[in-house]
Length: 361
Image 1 (tube, rainbow, N blue to C red):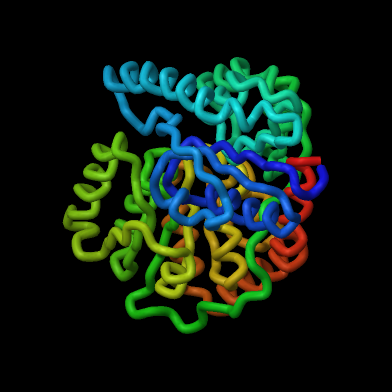
Image 2 (cartoon, rainbow, N blue to C red; image 1 turned 135 degrees about the horizontal axis):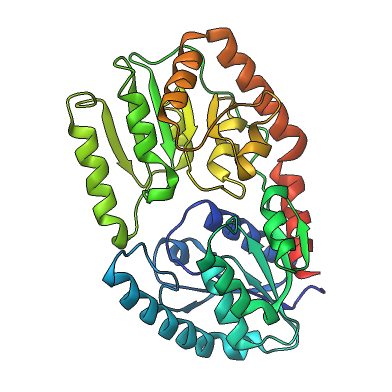
């Protein structure tokens, strides 16, 4: 694709988590290449962070938002209506022959399908396809997908099984960066950087730390309005005697500010992550990472770059945290191996141009 053409990015949310951080990096890369950039996303932190040179097309939230029970059916109807409204908002740009359409999330795929961009759309896959809901969305949008760009080999497997054209292009983070860690905080602090939504496994982490009375835990991340009940459950669990006074909810915070506060980083997701940016960021700074043994997390931490535990196993997570906290030499070895993995395979100066080329070539 030549410079001076347009790249249209479609995102389902206005919040900023790992997937949206990648999108912001891609916008910067497209700008550097001389492309015009347009982003269609809801109003919010994401739109506030795009460059002034990027045109913003405001649309509604395109996902279900975490609602449960009867409210989920109502949310689904609203979601369908927003797909159609968003497709009308971006159709003119998407149908230009010089526009490359990049879909940054599963729930934005139907918008591309309804727009019918002449060159098709590239789907940057940040979620491992494991549920019927995900498969139905992909089936609906299948005709519009020119290529699915997976951020891990594990995430590529179900995409190929669904008959999609797939290439793998791994996520990257800033490198080089200074090393963090060393002497433990007093008391030691375990942290998790993830949206407060059930599949991220915060409850498993709290149950694990409940068995470690000399450990504090911090939860960094915001939440969807539909997950309000889940957040209240977490706060109630944190208030019980076995955790009282040892859990802090940090809310939205940047990764580096959070990582400076922590001795061990946990990724406790109960469903497979595609390529969790928070894990790579912690690895780059040399902090020991404990993650669940599936998806992209397995690929990042396998071979000594971290510790892997079974998903949903609070007892195994307790043991892993205790082992890391009690072994200073082991923590340093894990951090060194993690930094080497990032330098070798996840330097954003190398991964980002490759990812951009995969998406718009």
